[in-house]
Amino acid sequence: MIARRTLKDFAESLRASKDYKAVKTALDAWFYEVQASVWNSPADVKKSYGNASIVGEDRVVFNIKGNGYRLVAAIDYQRQIVSSSGWEHTKNMTALTLGRFNMRIKPIRGEADYDEALHRVEALWGSKSGTTEGDALDVLVPLIEAYEREHYPIDFPDPIDAIKFRLEQQGKDYRSLVGVIGQRTRVYEVMRGARPLSLNMIRKLHDKLGIPAEVLIQSPQPPRKRVKRESAGRNKKARAIRRAI
Image (cartoon, rainbow, N blue to C red; front, side):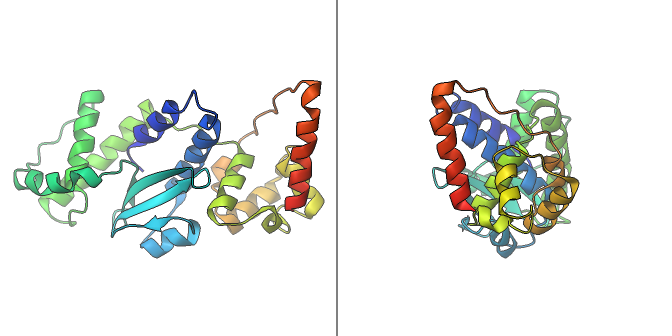
Protein backbone atom coordinates (compact mmCIF):
# COMPACT_ATOMS: atom_id res chain seq x y z
CA MET A 1 0.00 0.00 0.00
CA ILE A 2 1.56 3.29 -1.10
CA ALA A 3 0.54 6.95 -1.33
CA ARG A 4 -0.59 7.11 2.32
CA ARG A 5 -0.28 10.89 2.16
CA THR A 6 -3.34 10.97 -0.09
CA LEU A 7 -5.45 9.38 2.65
CA LYS A 8 -4.11 11.59 5.42
CA ASP A 9 -4.38 14.82 3.41
CA PHE A 10 -7.95 14.09 2.37
CA ALA A 11 -9.04 13.31 5.93
CA GLU A 12 -7.30 16.44 7.18
CA SER A 13 -9.13 18.54 4.59
CA LEU A 14 -12.39 17.55 6.32
CA ARG A 15 -11.26 18.43 9.85
CA ALA A 16 -13.77 21.28 10.10
CA SER A 17 -16.56 19.11 8.72
CA LYS A 18 -19.01 16.98 10.70
CA ASP A 19 -17.91 14.07 8.49
CA TYR A 20 -14.27 14.24 9.62
CA LYS A 21 -14.30 11.52 12.29
CA ALA A 22 -16.41 9.09 10.27
CA VAL A 23 -14.36 9.51 7.10
CA LYS A 24 -11.01 9.32 8.89
CA THR A 25 -12.07 6.18 10.75
CA ALA A 26 -13.29 4.58 7.51
CA LEU A 27 -10.04 5.42 5.69
CA ASP A 28 -7.96 4.06 8.58
CA ALA A 29 -10.00 0.83 8.57
CA TRP A 30 -9.74 0.58 4.77
CA PHE A 31 -5.96 1.00 4.92
CA TYR A 32 -5.39 -1.85 7.37
CA GLU A 33 -7.80 -4.12 5.51
CA VAL A 34 -5.96 -3.48 2.26
CA GLN A 35 -2.60 -4.07 3.94
CA ALA A 36 -3.78 -7.53 4.99
CA SER A 37 -5.51 -8.44 1.72
CA VAL A 38 -4.31 -10.67 -1.11
CA TRP A 39 -6.08 -9.77 -4.35
CA ASN A 40 -5.25 -11.59 -7.56
CA SER A 41 -8.08 -10.14 -9.64
CA PRO A 42 -10.95 -7.64 -9.49
CA ALA A 43 -13.21 -10.54 -8.49
CA ASP A 44 -11.21 -10.92 -5.27
CA VAL A 45 -11.78 -7.25 -4.48
CA LYS A 46 -15.53 -7.61 -5.02
CA LYS A 47 -15.68 -10.50 -2.56
CA SER A 48 -14.65 -8.16 0.24
CA TYR A 49 -16.07 -4.91 -1.12
CA GLY A 50 -19.39 -5.70 -2.72
CA ASN A 51 -20.19 -2.01 -3.25
CA ALA A 52 -16.89 -1.24 -4.98
CA SER A 53 -16.92 -0.37 -8.68
CA ILE A 54 -14.39 -1.91 -11.07
CA VAL A 55 -13.64 0.84 -13.58
CA GLY A 56 -10.73 -0.64 -15.50
CA GLU A 57 -8.13 -3.36 -15.49
CA ASP A 58 -6.37 -1.80 -12.52
CA ARG A 59 -8.75 0.83 -11.09
CA VAL A 60 -11.31 0.32 -8.34
CA VAL A 61 -13.63 2.88 -6.74
CA PHE A 62 -14.40 2.24 -3.08
CA ASN A 63 -17.35 3.78 -1.27
CA ILE A 64 -16.45 5.53 1.97
CA LYS A 65 -19.04 6.53 4.58
CA GLY A 66 -21.92 5.00 2.70
CA ASN A 67 -21.72 6.54 -0.74
CA GLY A 68 -20.80 9.96 0.60
CA TYR A 69 -17.19 9.75 -0.57
CA ARG A 70 -15.49 7.67 -3.24
CA LEU A 71 -11.88 6.57 -3.09
CA VAL A 72 -10.13 5.68 -6.36
CA ALA A 73 -7.33 3.15 -6.00
CA ALA A 74 -4.93 1.64 -8.53
CA ILE A 75 -4.11 -2.04 -8.02
CA ASP A 76 -1.21 -4.00 -9.45
CA TYR A 77 -2.44 -7.56 -8.91
CA GLN A 78 0.83 -9.14 -10.00
CA ARG A 79 2.94 -7.22 -7.51
CA GLN A 80 0.25 -6.93 -4.81
CA ILE A 81 0.55 -3.13 -4.74
CA VAL A 82 -2.34 -0.76 -4.03
CA SER A 83 -2.08 3.00 -4.46
CA SER A 84 -4.65 5.54 -3.34
CA SER A 85 -3.40 8.25 -5.69
CA GLY A 86 -6.17 8.31 -8.32
CA TRP A 87 -4.02 8.61 -11.41
CA GLU A 88 -6.39 8.99 -14.34
CA HIS A 89 -4.71 12.29 -15.27
CA THR A 90 -1.33 10.58 -15.77
CA LYS A 91 -2.29 8.15 -18.54
CA ASN A 92 -1.16 10.41 -21.37
CA MET A 93 2.03 11.26 -19.50
CA THR A 94 2.97 7.62 -19.04
CA ALA A 95 3.85 6.86 -22.65
CA LEU A 96 6.04 9.97 -22.89
CA THR A 97 7.87 9.30 -19.65
CA LEU A 98 8.68 5.65 -20.31
CA GLY A 99 10.33 6.53 -23.59
CA ARG A 100 13.11 8.43 -21.83
CA PHE A 101 13.21 6.41 -18.61
CA ASN A 102 16.53 5.50 -17.01
CA MET A 103 17.26 3.29 -14.01
CA ARG A 104 18.79 6.04 -11.84
CA ILE A 105 17.09 5.67 -8.46
CA LYS A 106 18.10 7.55 -5.32
CA PRO A 107 17.12 7.36 -1.62
CA ILE A 108 14.06 9.26 -0.46
CA ARG A 109 15.41 11.86 1.96
CA GLY A 110 12.59 14.39 1.97
CA GLU A 111 9.27 15.49 0.48
CA ALA A 112 10.80 16.52 -2.84
CA ASP A 113 12.32 13.05 -3.29
CA TYR A 114 9.03 11.50 -2.13
CA ASP A 115 7.00 13.46 -4.68
CA GLU A 116 9.44 12.52 -7.43
CA ALA A 117 9.27 8.84 -6.47
CA LEU A 118 5.46 8.87 -6.53
CA HIS A 119 5.43 10.48 -9.96
CA ARG A 120 7.88 7.91 -11.28
CA VAL A 121 5.71 5.09 -9.93
CA GLU A 122 2.71 6.65 -11.67
CA ALA A 123 4.60 6.62 -14.95
CA LEU A 124 5.82 3.05 -14.45
CA TRP A 125 2.50 1.63 -13.24
CA GLY A 126 1.65 -1.63 -14.98
CA SER A 127 5.18 -2.28 -16.29
CA LYS A 128 5.92 -5.94 -16.92
CA SER A 129 8.20 -7.85 -14.56
CA GLY A 130 11.67 -8.48 -15.91
CA THR A 131 11.82 -5.25 -17.91
CA THR A 132 13.92 -2.23 -17.00
CA GLU A 133 10.78 -0.32 -16.11
CA GLY A 134 9.38 -3.22 -14.07
CA ASP A 135 12.64 -3.57 -12.15
CA ALA A 136 12.59 0.14 -11.35
CA LEU A 137 9.02 -0.13 -10.07
CA ASP A 138 10.00 -3.06 -7.84
CA VAL A 139 12.79 -0.96 -6.32
CA LEU A 140 10.83 2.27 -5.91
CA VAL A 141 7.80 0.83 -4.11
CA PRO A 142 9.72 -0.46 -1.03
CA LEU A 143 11.54 2.89 -0.79
CA ILE A 144 8.20 4.72 -0.76
CA GLU A 145 6.71 2.30 1.77
CA ALA A 146 9.67 2.79 4.13
CA TYR A 147 9.42 6.58 3.89
CA GLU A 148 5.66 6.56 4.46
CA ARG A 149 5.89 4.28 7.50
CA GLU A 150 8.07 6.89 9.18
CA HIS A 151 6.48 10.11 7.95
CA TYR A 152 2.84 9.16 7.28
CA PRO A 153 1.78 6.58 9.88
CA ILE A 154 -1.88 5.57 9.76
CA ASP A 155 -3.80 5.44 13.05
CA PHE A 156 -5.45 2.19 14.03
CA PRO A 157 -9.25 2.56 13.90
CA ASP A 158 -11.35 1.82 16.95
CA PRO A 159 -12.20 -1.92 16.83
CA ILE A 160 -15.96 -1.27 16.94
CA ASP A 161 -15.69 1.26 14.12
CA ALA A 162 -13.66 -1.29 12.13
CA ILE A 163 -16.43 -3.86 12.59
CA LYS A 164 -19.04 -1.33 11.43
CA PHE A 165 -16.93 -0.47 8.38
CA ARG A 166 -16.56 -4.15 7.41
CA LEU A 167 -20.31 -4.75 7.75
CA GLU A 168 -21.05 -1.68 5.62
CA GLN A 169 -18.67 -2.78 2.86
CA GLN A 170 -20.27 -6.22 2.74
CA GLY A 171 -23.82 -4.86 2.85
CA LYS A 172 -24.51 -6.54 6.18
CA ASP A 173 -25.94 -5.40 9.50
CA TYR A 174 -25.52 -6.31 13.16
CA ARG A 175 -27.60 -9.44 12.74
CA SER A 176 -24.70 -11.05 10.88
CA LEU A 177 -22.66 -10.80 14.11
CA VAL A 178 -24.99 -13.19 15.95
CA GLY A 179 -23.03 -16.41 16.29
CA VAL A 180 -19.74 -14.59 15.68
CA ILE A 181 -19.66 -12.32 18.72
CA GLY A 182 -22.37 -14.26 20.52
CA GLN A 183 -26.12 -14.09 20.95
CA ARG A 184 -28.16 -10.93 20.36
CA THR A 185 -27.63 -9.58 23.85
CA ARG A 186 -23.87 -10.04 23.65
CA VAL A 187 -23.75 -8.37 20.23
CA TYR A 188 -25.70 -5.43 21.63
CA GLU A 189 -23.32 -5.09 24.60
CA VAL A 190 -20.20 -5.19 22.45
CA MET A 191 -21.40 -2.82 19.74
CA ARG A 192 -22.50 -0.18 22.25
CA GLY A 193 -19.13 -0.42 24.03
CA ALA A 194 -20.41 -2.00 27.24
CA ARG A 195 -18.32 -5.17 26.84
CA PRO A 196 -14.81 -5.59 25.38
CA LEU A 197 -14.00 -8.04 22.65
CA SER A 198 -12.75 -11.35 23.97
CA LEU A 199 -9.92 -13.31 22.34
CA ASN A 200 -12.46 -15.79 20.98
CA MET A 201 -14.55 -12.94 19.48
CA ILE A 202 -11.43 -11.44 17.89
CA ARG A 203 -10.51 -14.80 16.38
CA LYS A 204 -13.99 -15.30 14.92
CA LEU A 205 -14.25 -11.74 13.57
CA HIS A 206 -10.89 -12.17 11.88
CA ASP A 207 -11.73 -15.61 10.43
CA LYS A 208 -15.29 -14.91 9.32
CA LEU A 209 -15.22 -11.22 8.37
CA GLY A 210 -11.56 -10.77 7.49
CA ILE A 211 -10.96 -7.88 9.89
CA PRO A 212 -7.22 -7.67 10.65
CA ALA A 213 -6.45 -9.05 14.11
CA GLU A 214 -3.99 -6.19 14.74
CA VAL A 215 -6.95 -3.79 14.52
CA LEU A 216 -9.27 -5.82 16.72
CA ILE A 217 -6.77 -6.16 19.59
CA GLN A 218 -6.54 -2.39 20.01
CA SER A 219 -8.14 -0.89 23.09
CA PRO A 220 -11.45 0.72 22.17
CA GLN A 221 -11.70 4.47 22.54
CA PRO A 222 -13.34 5.44 25.84
CA PRO A 223 -16.86 6.82 25.36
CA ARG A 224 -17.06 10.57 25.57
CA LYS A 225 -18.75 11.97 28.65
CA ARG A 226 -22.17 13.35 27.86
CA VAL A 227 -24.22 15.86 29.73
CA LYS A 228 -27.50 14.64 31.16
CA ARG A 229 -29.66 16.43 28.63
CA GLU A 230 -28.20 14.15 25.94
CA SER A 231 -29.42 11.00 27.64
CA ALA A 232 -32.46 10.88 25.40
CA GLY A 233 -30.19 10.79 22.35
CA ARG A 234 -28.07 8.06 23.89
CA ASN A 235 -31.16 5.98 24.64
CA LYS A 236 -32.35 6.50 21.08
CA LYS A 237 -28.99 5.19 19.77
CA ALA A 238 -29.20 2.17 22.05
CA ARG A 239 -32.72 1.39 20.80
CA ALA A 240 -31.47 1.67 17.21
CA ILE A 241 -28.79 -0.93 17.90
CA ARG A 242 -31.35 -3.28 19.45
CA ARG A 243 -33.62 -2.95 16.43
CA ALA A 244 -30.71 -3.66 14.07
CA ILE A 245 -29.90 -6.97 15.73
